[in-house]
Length: 178
Image (tube, rainbow, N blue to C red; front, side):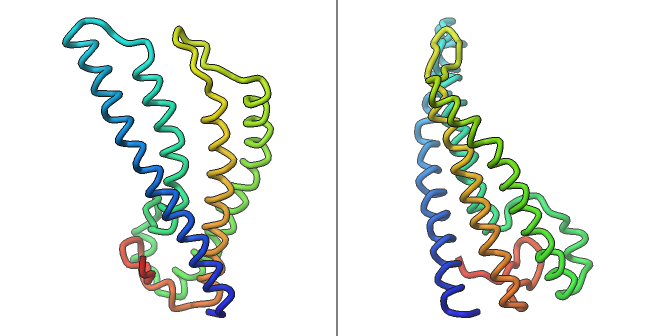
């Protein structure tokens, strides 16, 4: 793989790995908040108006920001049976077709997500629940995660394009050192 392509691939993958690890720290907030919600409801018979909504609002960005790194790690749903049955050339062809579809999906969603997030930010959108927290910050993660996912798909596609040996097997054996 040409050196500039390798540098780009490494940079995008490292960025998404860093964001994933940072986002995974959100679990240290989500779990205690949900534990509080369960205990307050079932032990003290006093449900909170904010705990489950807080956990949901925090889980959204966690879920969205984990996607790009998960794509790199091949953790998304795939057709393993087809990949295992196919030879290396067919697997490479499938990946060369797959990544542009992911990129197109990201671009199309981004066209809708940007106005959606900007409108939520401009109006200071809230949840309209009894607690009524702002939800516009959560909606800003949608276009951000689509950009990150599209970038990861692009560099994965470029990797497969420049390095035919990069596609060695299905999900668990993807020939990339993490």
